[in-house]
Length: 86
Image (cartoon, rainbow, N blue to C red; front, side, top):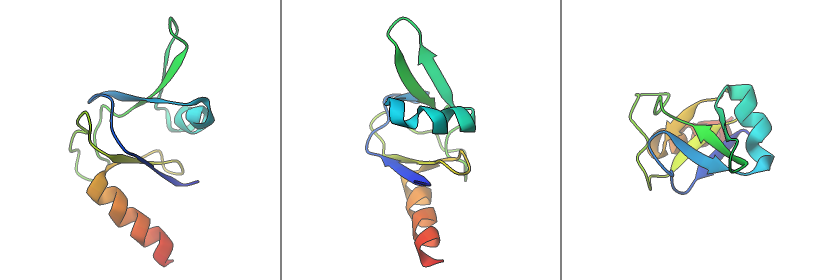
């Protein structure tokens, strides 16, 4: 499960994730945990790993579970095509 596409970002800083993605977020150093609500979040404050473009609320984006990169929709689609071509 190397490349995951999120349909919409919750905010420019983070997006809520389920427990199944926690270990990938921990490995990437991107896990945030809201202790009061018990919810897990994927941190993406650094924006797209290719050009630094911020992920805006409502924007689709990708999380590369192998590299830990966050990618905007365009760069994520590009990387997805590259990984299926090899």
